[in-house]
Image 1 (cartoon, rainbow, N blue to C red):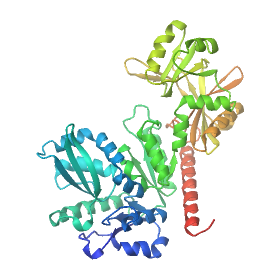
Image 2: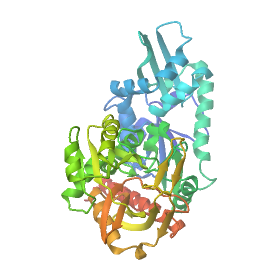
Image 3: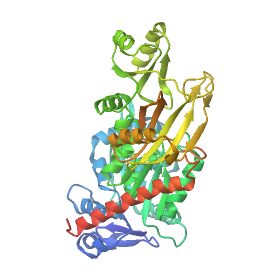
Image 4: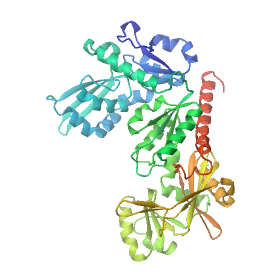
Length: 495
């Protein structure tokens, strides 16, 4: 990928960076040749990013041209947003207090050069701020109040305002940054598109294990993606990629949802898309959706406080109570008798004003059908944990026991299971879903639709092997190509 630095006056650019072109802002904005160039990473170092300034238009046009600007337009908006500044200040409050504790005055200015500072004691804070506001040169202003230090504002440093005493340092960290970007790819290898995989290696119940992640990476690289695994600290980097694949358990009140929202706003292809996260992670929504569309499900009611009699009348015992955002069998309780109901309700209502109460349907195993772009591509039987009513059993000791899983070729799964799974998933969208179902008494019931289904090595992939991972990445590639084609037609004035 070609790296260029766009500045107001190239003759005033103080750094010599091998392999990096310096381009005047007028040339980048006005020369039609730049509209035709592909695979460009644009480092916008103009003196101002204010709305409708030349610096603002550099990032705006870079995005329209399919280039990768740093900062992107959304980051430029974040730099001006006091709401975003307060949010970041609150998120980093402990680090800010620790880093600035030795400062004697009530004001402090921190210069951040590609995520670094000339004083090593501020490096960690500099990296965190760079991760949130991804612009090459930043100046952060801090103010000490009654509650301690807080971030007051943050904005770009014009390249010409870098103090002469800092220039050697800035040149070094800039070279390290550019060389680091180049070394991420195999020598001499160019890729068509950039894919980010969001995951958390410390997650207790990740949707994909390490081996499955490696299989996804391998499949994507074979399709000419450059792949980078990212974490929650890389939020501001999303504009550098063409697509985002979320392999971390999703929730609306969580950074995974913010990542999906921002990726979609930046024009990335994203799985899981924010609409699917919003719809699937709330079981109140799913219960209403399935009932309204007459998709067979266990008898279900949406329960508010004081409706115990309705539960006993319409569902009876035993029954299942679920928090709206429960996952991996957490936040799900089985109530066997009326005397057990009140303690369970009190615990669950403490976290949500609405609950799901559902008929208990005992089965030896549950079905899971994987659906991608409205097509089934794997099927699996999940057996209950030994002597337990759920797939997962969590002991008070913290240990977790799971029943065995058995993949089945889609064509060998019961047709009514596949058909019902598709009907349910298609109500959500055209993303990647795992539909959980029970087959009992000759009838199929949908338990839930998951937007972030488990895909683990030796489990869901037992029938398809590497082909499963390739199918997911081929769909990602198809969507990226389709989006790029639409963007090209739009730039060329085609309908």
